[in-house]
Length: 312
Image 1 (cartoon, rainbow, N blue to C red):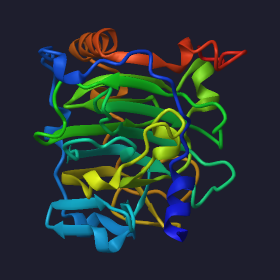
Image 2: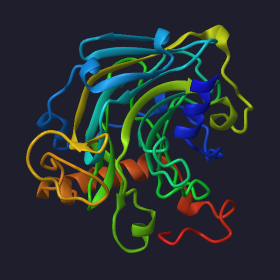
Image 3: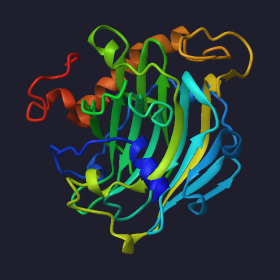
């Protein structure tokens, strides 16, 4: 129970009402061609980069591959051994097949354990298939404990995420945060203007988890996890962790990485021009994803916000 409580605190989310109920399997979209940023980074062995955060009996690790399982006893979660202040974070995930309502597979950055009252968080949350809708992608950003102002955007998939591995990526630097699926940007959160006060700024750990999100991920608990269809296994492969690392206040690696907020080391891999702005074909691909696949944005939810967040 203690580990479950920690998970709830480290993945703060809000229930959202879907604007549509259409299966992603009915979409025959061909994704645009984009630069494969993930090819520029090297995968790591899971045991070298991660510790078992909770649900250890439900975690199997074999080199660069791990299987995380949710069953009646527990979910499962990995956490990076280092904290990072900016970086490139990617993994190939294969989601549980079949009916998985209420199951949440999450790939996210958080510092809620270090800053319980004013934490930052950058989320990719994959919400399980129900009888009425398929797996969906939810992205979210919190800064300085802004949990009452969720900045969620939700997307349908253009492929079946249960049949093969697909790449999920977070780029976080001083310029912007970018959410990518198979190297296609689906969302960009800039660090400028009205966004700046809402921009994550403190070192964070990377988490990969599978857990029971019945209370919020299924329209207020309407479609909770049904364990007769379990156990629910998510596979994780080819994790890439490259950033300015902070480890218990001591620097690691070599070379300067001049950021505020702690002792940080190693050259920032996402400060170069390739990562400061999106290229023309990345912008075109992101526009495609948002036009074809996005079905919820907090900036369009007037029923939720009487006063819209400043950046909207």
